[in-house]
Length: 305
Image 1 (tube, one colour):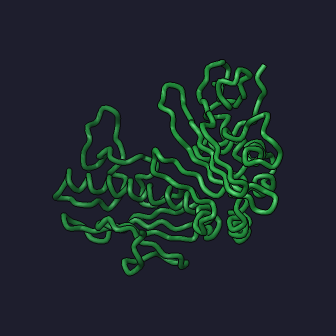
Image 2 (cartoon, rainbow, N blue to C red; image 1 turned 90 degrees about the horizontal axis):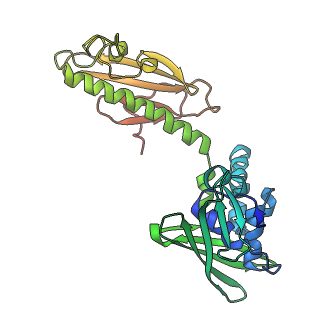
Image 3 (cartoon, one colour; image 1 turned 30 degrees about the horizontal axis):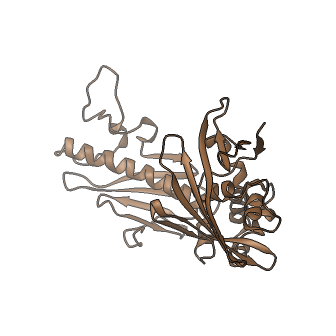
């Protein structure tokens, strides 16, 4: 009967950390044992003692909500189950770790430690990670002994030319304002969706240009062909001049009619700071602008990069 290991994260580098570490014979205090603790951790503190001190300092400077989200993501053992299946260590030694598809015995993922180089204070683990039917991907995990703990410093994914440097000052920044950034992306996506529909309408009906009411972009009866009153270019729930979604209020205004017309799509948070602080403006030029002031954005505000 194979021993069961708790699931770990989807991100390849964290999966690599987890998989390379799960060895029953790993001695205490070794790089592999440190990775075992990361993979099977149930508390953020267990993971954090194997992260660079500089990263821990940066995480401490995050606000409580961002830090809580960062700690959740550090518990990589809770994330893999829904994507790759339960991790097991095969008794036959065919691999260090495999992920079995739920409800079956089919292997979805296989990980091998191809090589370990350990100088006593620095270590590199070369991993081979293979999904069923795919080529093996090489993952390099770099570690350093700081005090009495082995800490993960860097993970390289040569195939994707990607390097994750955990001791880089910018690494912790990916956890800052994550929820607000995700909300901002959703808000701007809706605005661009309306923009595309408006541009299509203006091309289809050049004599009219941009409409004064977004309802003409919605769909008409099923047996009715698209026309200037029901163009069928935009979802009905957002084909209105004002609506609320994801904590934001959206407003459409026709600024100038005709073939050379202009308009403004404005999105403002209903409760500033709760869902976001930025307000957005998108006009016929396609330039997205924003402000963090409690007002409508204008054409004088900085474009969103």
